[in-house]
Length: 138
Image: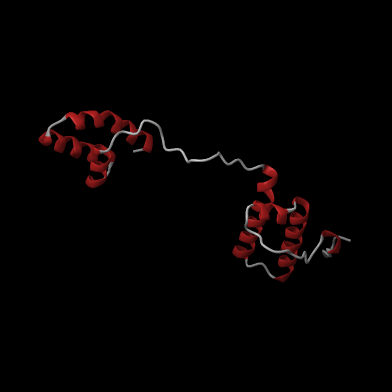
């Protein structure tokens, strides 16, 4: 049963459960547990607390990331993941370092990471696209 269907079922049963006497509450609780798949104690907690009208919202402003901020970080993480899965030999590690440094310089990732509080101190770029030597690409 989907979460929205469980919420609808709770909304239907909640008022009836609150108004019912103890023997009827027991039957309603068993029916609710059987249809929604809740454990008995969880169902009791849902049925005894006040019904929430609106879904829970996180306090504070809504966080919106710009694509220019997300793209280099995502590319970096994907490259790290591919390097880990493929257990890249040394030559692919160089290519990885080259792509990473090009991304960091192009999108000024160090200043972006400082804004989010994850990169302290200065970094040194070990490879640049101008220094790249890839065999077969004269």
